[in-house]
Image 1: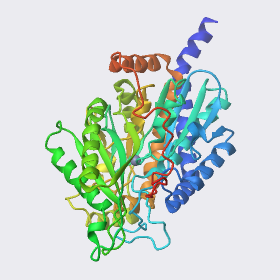
Image 2: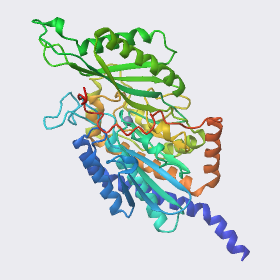
Image 3: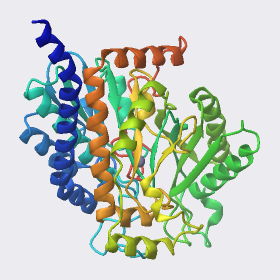
Image 4: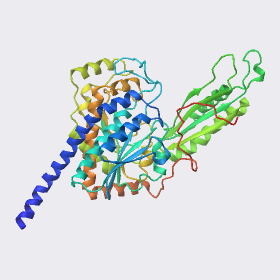
Length: 479
Ligand SMILES: [Zn+2]
């Protein structure tokens, strides 16, 4: 008896290692199976909250793998959860799949917008995000099915990360409340891990309604909506000087009239307010709003405010980040073949700055204590449950995010390799979380410490619905 239990004890770590290895291998296989789906999503390049085909594609894969799929969660038609197993622990893995406007591009190393596209492109690699995360989820589900892991794996398909912030609405709806931990990753130009954060952000559209008139024949009868928007933008530029360090204010004109000889009746601007801390963003927003009110006042036009809501900064979790970093470092086997090297060298010629060496993909960068510079609605999730993320090199080193170069890489095997590494790292980290209750408890304790008594409150208006039409610039009725 004693000998048997001793043998079992000795064999257990080896057995656990073999099981973890099986999960990793399976994640790699499913990532390759999902690559055609990633390419389809890359081709469709659907805007935020309009990811209909992409959602159907991924939900079908999850259903085929035996997951219980719940569509239309948090009153968002393209959001869904896919769950396998039962009971605790509940480990969540996030996925995204929306594309960006103005960035249509073929998978070639020079600027070439697609002729058949809708103008959008996957410049943030979200076509890889959902597909890799689902591959890892399926690998874990297989272990649960085989009785080797106990608990629930839940895949979250999260729409409109780029500005529509579905995860804020999904968090508010309580979809993450029973999770022990949540994993995510992001495509990038290098492999990275660490307890990094991001900027909190509020997004708003200011719409101005004026009076049209012949711009030469009767300009005195017109009140220009575009003038109001120009004044708003100027006000925001002046405001910039008087904001706390680390503030980012940026905007774009989404509608500004159509003819030079007509006083524009309608104009719309899309504004972002960002800072490393959500409470600062909340104080800045009313000041930006005043710029828009001033624009309307001075031009005798009417202001309509479409508040899209805010996203929190990520509360990083060092306990979990160390585990993800260890797995990513152990699993990283990225290397370019000749075709990929040729593509990469040609693409580098188009970068504004000197590009880092291609061998960079063989490293994992520690981004502990850093901010990504961007914002993500993953931030909101991280205020209610311990969250861990990492990045893998799906783009040529030095590729800027949200660029046509990122779209180009996303359609090549460079992205396929990065996606595969992400799926393996997710599966390995999820495996560790399923099998180590102490790790889960330590991660939770760290979150409690970082919250320091603060309670999560979504930066949304009361009962605010998800802005499902935020990618449309349109006049509102009732004027
Ligand atoms: Zn992104």
